[in-house]
Image (cartoon, rainbow, N blue to C red; front, side, top):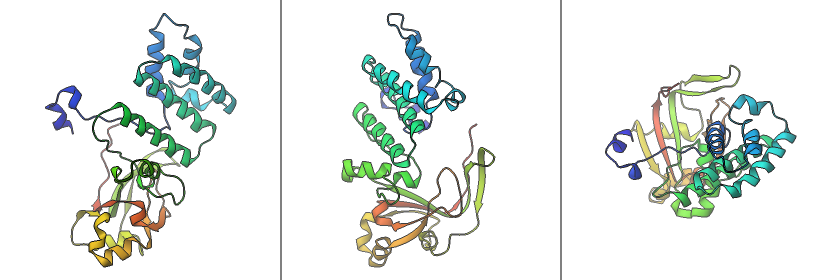
Length: 265
């Protein structure tokens, strides 16, 4: 991606854009500085509220009633923001506040879906979404996932790719010590699709589940309920899901041996 961008004009370059709603420090700072630099409007009430969100520590000390009051103030700001990116910055803060008032996984994924819709309407080209399997999948076994919302709106234009690996190391959040930690899995989980896929001859491969009808035995397997590993931002050996793979994903990338990513911070 870096190499591609080095030879492209700015309008054609690829970019990373956040879609999750569990943090709003960056956008709060952008909006705060913008309102600070606008002397033509009385923005003090907005600046006072935004000051609570330019630092995560500040927001952690707020109570539910304060979040509800802040939501109403920033909601009134939305109509005054003409530039699309400023409107979306304010909207991201509103989404964060909603999460603090009443967090549910379905609401989180619905808000991420709305962010992708906004991107689709305000940018050109294709969008590649990177998230954990539980968000990407198009089914709604335990909650309405991001992929479920996308599939129901965009149909075949949304292609859901799951990821799995046989063994190796990876990074996940260690809740007990409040930091990212490297974990290791020594072998595929027994009686799961992971164990089956690990038996293939290739060390890494892509499986297009939409073409499974050409292979009866594979089609029977992915249209039956099977167990598969469902690791998220945290890890536990108990993170296993059971469903029909073809209903969850359009394709799967499988890697026999993984190694943890290199942290940049």
